[in-house]
Amino acid sequence: MRIDLPYGDGVFTVDLPGRDGLRTAAGRSPAPVGDTAGALRRAVTDPVAGEALPSLVPGKGRISVLVADITRGAWVREVLRALLGVLEDAGAGPDRVDIVIAAGTHRMSDAGGLSRHLGPDVTGRWRTIEHDADDDEAMAEVGETAAGTVCRFRRSVAESALVVAIGGVTYHYFAGYGGARKLVLPGVAAGSTIVANHRLSLKKDPGEGIADGCRPGKLDGNPVHADMIEGARLLPASVFAVNVVTDETGRVAFLNAGELDLSHRAACRFLDEHFMIQLDRPCGAVIAAAGGWPRDINLLQAHKAMRNAASALDEGGVMLIAAACPEGIGSSSYREAFDDGRMVVPDRVRRRYTLNSQTALSTREITTRFSVYLHAGLDASEVSRFGMCPWEEGFAGFLLDGIPDEDILVLPNAAMFLPVVAGDGSSKRDEE
Figure: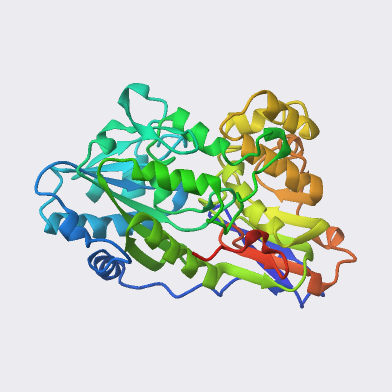
């Protein structure tokens, strides 16, 4: 059997002679909508809940349109263009609209990055701002959540007459799902607010790991999700959500809009229908890829695919995962958590929580429970730092020796698919 795994902007090919019975979760995603602009206009004029977008556009005052950074894919440009057309038709043109790259703590774009991400036709005509979570002077406090998160957001967004958030809905390893409310918190939040929100992903003793309720595919009972929604609702302006689900190639396959929570949940249901994989028993091995660029832009992003793939594995199972990681680890705090070795990560987190402590603890858990082999553009020393072994070309047959075909699952786009084992409700989305 020949397996082509997305890898950066190319493929990593795995040859497994005699292996013809492997189950592959690929080629099963929904068809693209085709006319994205038409789908967007229908969604915003007939929302899941709340008022239609054209009726929310104020006669005066600024409008903030929040979009994801380049790590979320090329679909952002297509949807944004259609949305800007709707706003302009409603009387809000470039003189009143700010496009805000809701990057949270992600890195800023390099020279020309915004133009490549959004298109020169957009950046040349519309005011575009990259959010900087460390710019304290640009923040305004709007309130505090029940969990104690002091919510400070970019002042220009907090003082807007209307906020429109365009979010991609995928599985997220501690927030349950991505989506429009993440464009507000953490998207345009201050660093201190992001740290407080993300700290909710860990148990009271942070060294004990990820908090109950913080897992992919779960909203109800998820403290991080609840805090994100509550924080977004503290904004004085109306927040209108646009939620997008893409197919495996990054094309828009689903689009809805409306009230922040209800529209998001409807998009999550669509995601589950098409990307949640039901398994009757755990697998002995998973052959996976993060899904290529930008999902494997760095190890921090690729970890999300590892978390999903781990959901399919039996204790002690084998994970072979390909992620190009052209930008390296992606976070100094993530890397530094492993400075003294994998086994002392919990103690380091107990002594000092940092923004990516939950990613470090999650990685440590995965590499402790399973044998993980990573094929990446990283030095072998960097791979081993995180408790993984380098996956060299030609090693797959040896590593899978003794594991029958029916106990092996192939996940070419592991960042998109969530395996759920029968009888294990840990990853099943809660019904409203």
